[in-house]
Image (cartoon, rainbow, N blue to C red; front, side):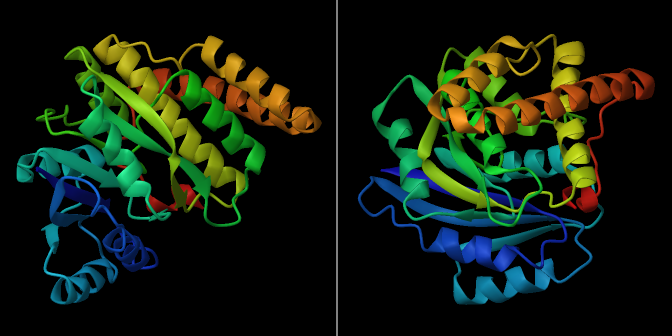
Length: 288
């Protein structure tokens, strides 16, 4: 039987953390040869009621643990803390504003148990709130992942064979995927493993979020010599054409979403070369 740890990085998530935890606690994996050892919430210097809420849940469910980092250090530092704490066979990670649908965890774990060449899985994101970007954007993302599976920190599980990340890395999820693939393994996109996430509800928030992601991709390309499918245009173009073929009546909105992504990529490229670095600590307001 494999041992499983679940980890949740958190910063000022008093509005979401309890729902995130309770939905994970309700996940049914009893049909799998897996033992859930712990659910660890690593609070990155939170200043709101996040820690208080998690502590309340730990009294109700001892499997939940709170680890507090006194000073805010950024996502890569939190992930490194998690990697240093966890010694189980499999690690599943979820964002603190991610709400799992029923059986999500089971779907993420099954390939790791029954397909030896797959050591990492990631789920399908859909907005929980009234996000600024329409459903068409998330459909294109879905087709992108079908073509080129991409690990997402919103919901992912992997064999615990990655030991550390560079301290300034932005896209921790993509770096973990790269490390798994460097060791000769594969990752898989599991569209049945659905999570609902809190997404930006303003255009400025969406631009900040997407710029940060793409600057992180540029960082991997420039500093680690790793070219991701998202850096080029081939895979995004294929995803767009697949989405249009599946739903021709949304052609205009699909195309508009893709145009916005191109604008953001150019903007992120300019900012990256002007600042000479990528933002590994970023404000929570980037969602807004």
